[in-house]
Amino acid sequence: MTDRTKRLLSLMVSLALGGGLLWLALRNADLEAVGAALADGEWGWMVPFVGLGLLSVVIRAWRWGLLIDALPGRTDRVPLRLTSASVAIGYLVNYAAPRLGEVARTAHVSRRAEAPFSAVLGTVVAERVLDVIMLALALLSVVVLFGDRVRAILEEAWDGIVEVLTVPAWVWVLVVLVAVALVVAAVVVVRRGQRIGALLAQFRDGLASVGRTGRPGAVVLSTLLLWACYGLMSDLPLRLLGLDAAYGLGPVEAWAVMAVGGIGMALPSPGGTGSFHYATVQALTLLFGVAVTPAATYALLVHAAGVVFYCLLGVVALTVQGTSLGALRSAAAARA
Figure 1: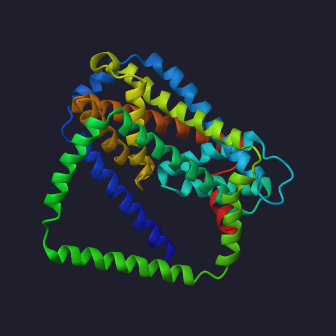
Figure 2: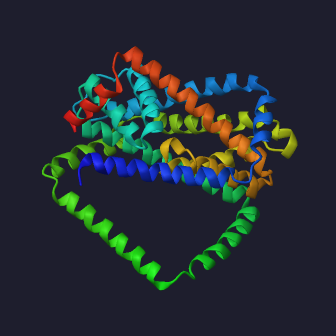
């Protein structure tokens, strides 16, 4: 199977996953009412939303720069302008091809800052590790704040799992065989890597940069500020749609919705399409008793606003940096 075929299959699976979850999220929503709610929204709240979006990009770029500067052999600091533009480009690419945004922004910084591609990619992984920790803490805070509601939801979900477990035995045999085949394929790919040792060494350098920054306080502060921006960006659309008054939803509830929606964004669907909508609708309806239609309206608004904002920002970043997606792809292939 060629690399092109693998990428095509991966994209098809991603689109199918996103499309299926989007249908599940919107199947019971009144789309005409969704349009009316958006038309009647207080769109002035989008101004601080955009401001927070820009601030979040700069904060993420600042934190990433701290990690890159700590790589072995680095003597010059990577400019904040470069990391900010690269983060914006990464967001743009991720909406088209999940996870390739990390490769694109790594290639751009690696080429402009003259740093090893794998080491810079390691700093991106280190960034993701920090975000996974924050997401886990956010989800834990949801359990602490809304324990009774979460328990009731889990009990209902367990009843559904019990029903699923009653499928015929041959289905489970097929699942096991597919899992084994995937593991074997992964082992074969790893064994065929000719320079895997050197690449892993550079990758390790990137991960270790978290401890070598010499500024752990700045790393922690930037992470907290970044997630505070995300929490506020989740709260503003509630006010735009009037859900704060209608359902008594505030910053704490917005934080919980953001945490659950973060699970959806982590799934391999294009830019979180479908998976984000489904997770967000479930959080609003199950945790806070919001009706399906306003919950779907909120999910569609937040996701669409993010797509438009980050894509426009990515296009601006490409223009300012004087590069293109094709050039980044070639740079990634050459440096990897």
